[in-house]
Length: 193
Ligand SMILES: Nc1nc2c(ncn2[C@@H]2O[C@H](COP(=O)(O)O)[C@@H](O)[C@H]2O)c(=O)[nH]1
Ligand SMILES: [Mg+2]
Image 1 (spheres, rainbow, N blue to C red):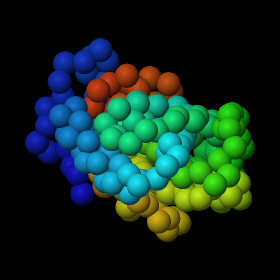
Image 2: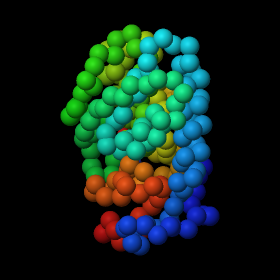
Image 3: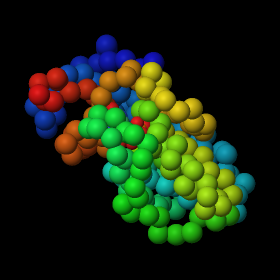
Image 4: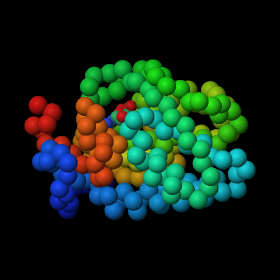
């Protein structure tokens, strides 16, 4: 489990809103290369380009770094979904706000996720995409909160297991802020209040 103990919060554009750094910029870079290497290896014999599906907006930073670290050709697709629930947890009832632009039938598809919390959103998405008849469908997630997971999902790659805390940065927001931080961290409680 990745914890914050050893990292100081670097000077950043949000002043002292950040309480701790869980994963530094260097750690992200190193681990993303490892995830891309493992994923490239799985698909290096395939003829067709691999389709990477980004679930907006949280995975946007991750997928761009991940795709550039891959050693096989990839094509990017974007989806936007809204998950009904309260402000801090999803219900698993999902509505598609933006669908893929292309047919994925008979194609190798990797969902590139920012974070798995309960896993309910991803579980719904996997069923939805599986019904479209891809040749293969797998998931690479940057973060996972093992203590929060409610549905077991088969994950091809996991970047970091983190504590059950609300995190921001590297694509992850609170009220649309903090996505542009180059590291993953936690906010001071006063920011929520
Ligand atoms: N900024 C943050 N967003 C989070 C966090 N944990 C989850 N999420 C968002 O929810 C979905 C996944 O939710 P799930 O319960 O259905 O697995 C994820 O893609 C994020 O958009 C968090 O700590 N910080
Ligand atoms: Mg997500």
